[in-house]
Length: 337
Image (tube, rainbow, N blue to C red):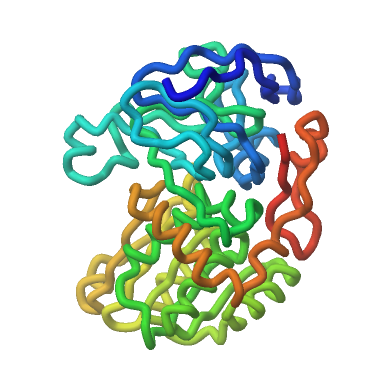
């Protein structure tokens, strides 16, 4: 072990009715494990859905899966270095099951997830709403360059990396007509990434403030015409149906927002065949997408106002105030444990 870690840390434990900030023991690190001191954590929309009762989650648990921090200690055989500023993947894969061996580690048969594990289980410090988080073997870790502010780096662990996966599924973007459904953090990131790739990017969102943001990140209001690529982050059946209906010959529809049960969507197989359409889904992401996310944010940090999307962080003891939707013009609240 490179360094003796602290024995106790502060963690915000989700109890089902609120968060309880308490002192929590830090376990001894096993082989492949890394202890990170959290510098800043952003609040993903899925965690807001959890605390609002719209999404089931382990309870009690330490939530939080978008964060940046400093490695302060490592167990044997990690490859990580104390002192590195890093972000880490949401999923933790075994690396050995058939899905992992086929390249689908995000759907590992025994997948565990940062910020999703029970506090009373064998990985209590799994979430980023804490002063320290333990990263088990199988967690992808990406080093953050000094040029990237904490508030820009933290969302990369979920929003930006997921977008990188959806763009890979979408295929070639240069010169293509792209429709982005939803202008939250994922949608806005996709707008910027598609615009950077040379696409003509149209955006649909019912929120006027988010539509205004979309124009600052390379998008424009949808004209209702045909598109080559449609990417949906809304999860709305109506939005997905509209996007599917707008695909031109050879078009591709990528679904990333449909992560909760909803109404079925009618798909005409003859239309799919005759129009050479592709419909695909993306859930979570692979290690390469996390590294691409960091690279993309660093390359575009002077072109797009990423940091302006995040509310100034509050202390961990004030976390309850951060577990609310961000104000107009912002897409993430933040915590500085």
